[in-house]
Length: 223
Image 1: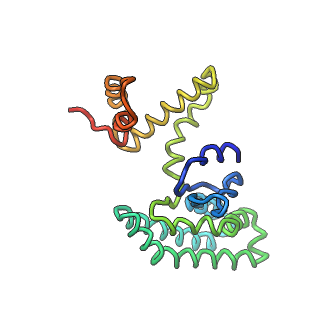
Image 2: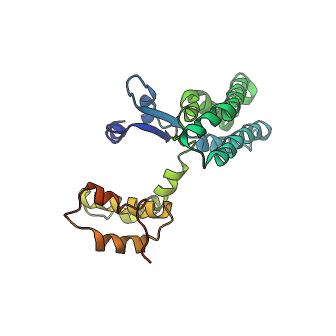
Image 3: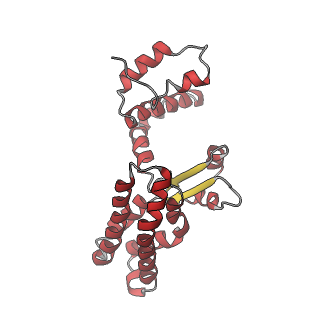
């Protein structure tokens, strides 16, 4: 919780996470104005996929509805944030209401809730109703944190190597380089070409605007 607080101390906007308890306190918008905590629907879907073996009929109903949410996001991809928020309110909110209604019905069925994996999935939805709904409030909010997790995957895969990194200062430098490389991939830039260009252009005399222009989302490959 302390680490998350430090990361979000100067942040304003929406952030999307799984159901880890350290994030839940930041859902209080009175105590944390400017922050919109959104739950991750990819994690919800994953729990119902895991429960298919114990209640396939019920789980497929949830999975089908969740897929409609993601289908909407694909349709809204090229819209402005304002248009996206409007369309989410119009088309995604009814889907959310159906999912929440199903979750309440299943939660009241003792026989179904006796199946541990299904119980885990349903409780995950019922315990995070507000945060899972929040993405419809902000057109810039993400419906899942998949993009972030995909960027972190290479770091997790190299965890054993990172254990020998040497010091906390070296770890910060390595994290910075990981961030640059993954940002290149996210922006469809070749990391090697980008880093070669960065090392040639980076100067101590550059101001913040000049440095910002060298980040992967602004960098233009040289011919």
